[in-house]
Image 1: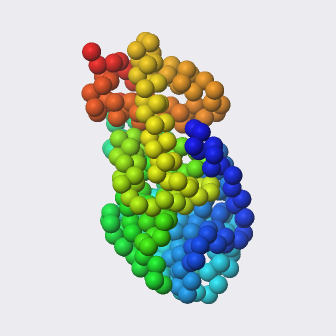
Image 2: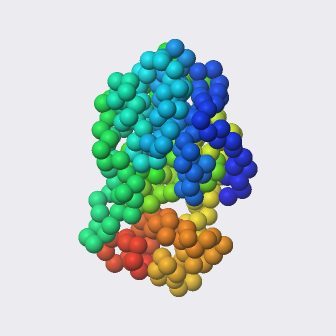
Image 3: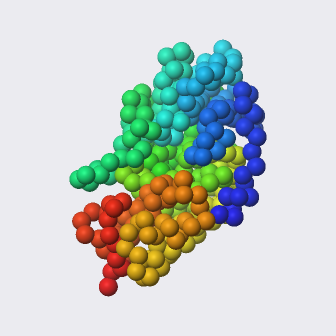
Length: 303
């Protein structure tokens, strides 16, 4: 996607707390991968006391880096955007060290129940042990050191995904919902394409103009970027409908054509994305399948 490519330049500055604005700092974990870009971004909000967002994985040296950045200051809260294991394990350790409560929308949960015979491909990547000390519903607020975080429920990547608007600033911490380096994985049953698209519309109705994502650098011109994501997802949906019209019935057939320029190593993730689109199309009645939408199902156009 052209919009994503234009915002890929990023220096993770491992081991350092990078100042973004007054009282806003980024600390990137050194856990690079095809799914995390340079690594997971944690954020620190405040000067005299701190709110930490998405402290990341519990990897070698990362705890010491966080403690150096905290520098003896009070930690008022540890907020998490969602419960994937590249975002949350350090939250448990920092809570034990600082006594700060963990803030989240809910424990981990899938967007829908598993169908008979279905497995959750991301089950091992989910922090099922995390239970929030403070539950933040949509619109919930948390204040510390004069900074106010407002929770914005943005399901899609996961059912419990939150973004955090920093009131009085142009910034929104967008977690994995909107990222400049890549499109977001939306994979059933954890994720829901219908929810994801609705959440994009929700962000478009908000005033924030700069997003601080869970991976990669800041997303500027946020509204224009989100409109680009929406167009990209709708283009992918049209491509799926075109493949069905051409006679493809299985996700494997569709992926081979739609993702022909993508490394085959990523075709498994691509198949889950196609499934997410097909779920939404089945829900709307545009596509038919026998039984529930499944990765191994057969699909056809309505009418």
